[in-house]
Image 1 (cartoon, rainbow, N blue to C red):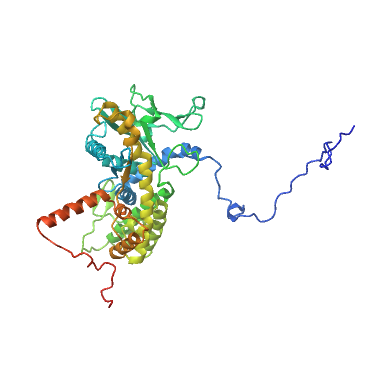
Image 2 (cartoon, rainbow, N blue to C red):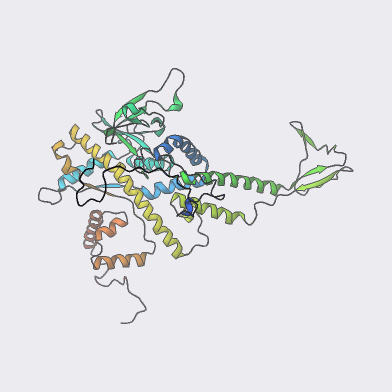
Length: 490
């Protein structure tokens, strides 16, 4: 029996069967050369593992090797110093309170109170639980640890004794990558909820290397709001960090061994040593015996006559040769690219550079430092300040304010360090032109140099008062020659 088919359908309801045909292998050229399988790409093996599987399997060894390089490799130490100097700087990233009243105007009283209390807290000995660091020291530690280890762990602990917040930096080795319990939704020592939000961290009470005999380490559960786990996620669903040096570490280690071999070879070559040979194979008795080996000492300008039948074969290694320096530069350029820094800065090499090339490199590099500054502010600075403010309100450290004022008092901005202009005259003139045409504000220009507009204007006001006090007039208004060509005629 057949069913009635609506007029708009041309198909039959009876199922049709068709035997499966074997799919012939594709013999044509693939769409991407990176997908080609041939004798040249047979050793190019890709990975299907997730980022978290790669981190779980390799992050511990990468971290150990990165720490060893930071101890022994000069270029790694230089890189870590560059990270701290350019992201944190001398004075660190400075907090600026922007509290407003109900009518939208700055609340000067609240601003002064918050900034005064914060300045007291950031001093050396006040912000960490052991009293060994200042807030700038903590910022430097975060940046160096994340660049070297890939991630940083820190506890935020309200301290009843001091009635304030205290920070406790923790070695990331205490957050085990091996601790995974799918029944409790724990992966690599981090406990998650159903939305993949961290709700707790399982941290060892001691470093794994500090366990001796009956003194064993245990895991302690800390709620996520007490923990700062700072790392830069490069992949979706990434749960742990990896060293920023990971892609460059192999070359850094090989380059260190290459330099050591070249240095030893140069030292041997400078010694101009050689071997004594004889037809009967008995050799030369030498002048002295050390550990059972016959040796002959050599002195500058000293010659001696060899016994009959003994010949001297010189050993004169010529390496490192003229190719040594170009090879070193080539390798270091690749390493610098992997570290996202300029070769000239990493190698401290300004030979052969001109103003235009170094200016371009400096500008590109500063964009990377600004990106790291933004990450540090969002991942660490703002979270610490919010926790500090909450603790101050809890213990009554802000006078008549309480937890109901938290949202209004939590209005802050962060001023990172800036850099001097590469070409001061041209850059200043460009900024003046941008301000005059409404493309920038004075606050933007001042912030680019790492300063605060309120502080700059306050200093200008103080200078003006001093000028009036001493009846000095250093410059006539409107007579500035900035941006003009002194050779240009009216």
